[in-house]
Image 1 (cartoon, rainbow over the protein chains, first blue to last red):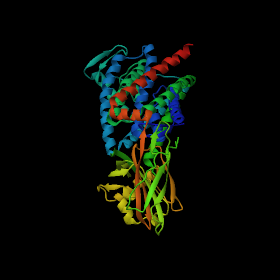
Image 2 (cartoon, rainbow over the protein chains, first blue to last red; image 1 turned 90 degrees about the vertical axis):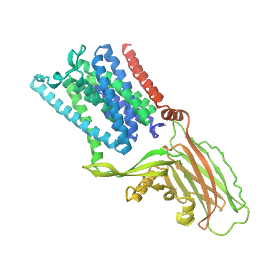
Image 3 (cartoon, helix red, strand yellow; image 1 turned 180 degrees about the vertical axis):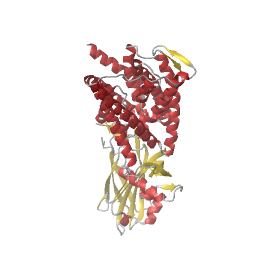
Image 4 (cartoon, rainbow over the protein chains, first blue to last red; image 1 turned 180 degrees about the horizontal axis):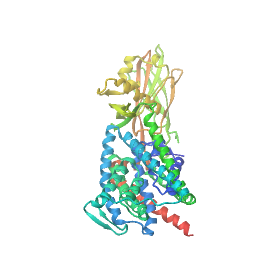
Length: 306
Length: 250
């Protein structure tokens, strides 16, 4: 069954879009990631204009993050104070990101920017994750030895210190602001929540306890992606609410199955699988940039004349 | 999907022309609804004569032109090992849709001068191009090539069936991704490659229902639209988690 998307102005198969949402939902349930980094490229592949894919994606992430944060609220694993600092950084970053996005859109370089960001981030994250899980598997065979804890250097010496009770930290607000800002920029440009950057940053840079990391990042993602949705909608009218609804319907159902599949697999296996998938998507996008396209020209509409 | 609305039968009364076109269409409007998946316009008509038919080969040309757009055409080039957009031109006015159907081969039906005067063929229809790059022709060709592959531009030679030099009909396909607006429809009658009569009407292509509501809201009240999208997202996110929690506790 075809459905005409009012903003993207393309006709898509409803079941295809529901299915994509479902697949990404399963993955996000299995791995505990938002899945935005996989869904945006998939939307490119089915012919949604990149600008619409990125903007719409942020709406869908709001829904899935709310769903996730509610579970964490019950377990009291959300650090609101830290989360709010991250939100402030995130809002500034999202603003900058949307300005950059629209500027490059007018230059015709937004596709390139989005694709390059994907190649770089997916490549780095996927690669690191792959190596890390291989190491973890090897360690398990040899018997577990805890990794030496890193010394706290620069982060300790910065001013404007604040106490974060839930995380049990007393640190400067500057690092969380910067982390939030970077994630905000990525959220606006890549149409992702940014959990895949924020979670490692929270653990390795801010030294937050692992149990509050996921809940707090979801809390930040809700506000930043909601803000991104508003910015994209107001500045470029590229949020397609029908597409968003179809995707989130698929995603919430998929996530429930994903959680059950995830519970049956070992953590290292999950990570290797996720890393492989991330690297595959990265590879596919990189190929498109490197191989000569069959059509060198492209058209973009500036205005409809009366 | 295709409703037969025999909506339009108009007479063009003109004393100067001995041969006039009487036109009918299966619909004079195309509604872009939620399940819109392209359309096909059936245009049919007759040639009305006040005097016996003159000598010479008779031809019928039907054109449908969508709203004009200002577009940018960009070209990719390899830089630093990757393919990126480099040169671009801006086309002041390119039709978003252009279909030409003829009853004979293009060369036999109309002369170049007449084509130029009435702006019938696709190359004539794309107007004024700025000159920041030297090879603008390549960009114009690309614009036509891409739009042709999307089904937005098309020349259908021998697409018009002309019966006994009196009745004619043609079917023109329209793709799903149409730009809403007025689609100017023109029919030319030619004899010995000269236009002897023409007729103009308009097909109204517009979004209706939910499509129209969302598109207008997004463009005229973007902030409200964003809040609505977010409200839906919040309700869906919360609803999903509540629903599945309920399933699990039972």
